[in-house]
Amino acid sequence: FYPSRQALKLHSEGKALSDDDVLEDLPVGTTAGLWSRKHLIHTHLENNKCLGPLFIYLPFYYRLPYIYGHEYVFTRSPFKVLKLASWCHSLHYFKRLVETSFIHRFSDGTLPLRTFMLCLYWGFAAWQACYINHPLYTPPTVFLHHLFVHFIQVCEFGNFSVHLILNGISCNGSRPTEIPYPTNNSFTWLFFFMSCPNYTYEVGSWISFTLLTQCVPGRQYSITHRPQRTTIESRRLHLKSLISDL
Image (cartoon, rainbow, N blue to C red; front, side):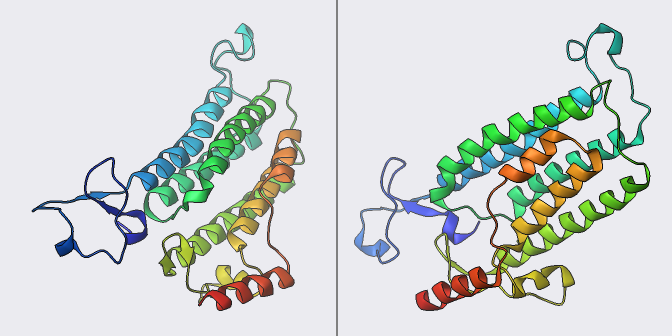
């Protein structure tokens, strides 16, 4: 129900009315249509991007038929790391589904990128699941399991905290008109140093997941993940561009 996600049209195939248009001067009669189609498309793609890895990973974890061979059907690995990895992977994408429905805002220019990311997420999810849950997989040192799981929890909570901050800033359409600042929540203090700490937390989560499982697909996914703004200079440039627009 964000105003930036809505458009007022005279009919379903028409163009969105300008903010300067006056309804009294338009031939709307007694009714007009309120549309939010672009946001629905973005939400649909984002939900598919997150639902795909959930439904792809779990069949490998439970070793359904025709995946690893008849002798391994519905067998369970004795290694605890596989269960921890499954929980972390599933909770990550469940969190993203919640954020898509209640927190995220989308810009029109990201639609082609999200279509590409849909294929990327699904492909890496299948590669990771096949590798980690393979019957011949051997886990890393047991001592490190809980350490990296805690790192994942910290990064996931930090990512969620930053998304709440970004959700609260005012926007003109899909363009922000307000500079995000950290709050008393210590997980948002990265805003002092960088412009996109939500991406930094997400990359940190995937690096921790890679160290937890010691798998090549996880490392490749972390490397090919979206670029980060993690330097003080990029933060200054971002603030300068926002101030010039205000």
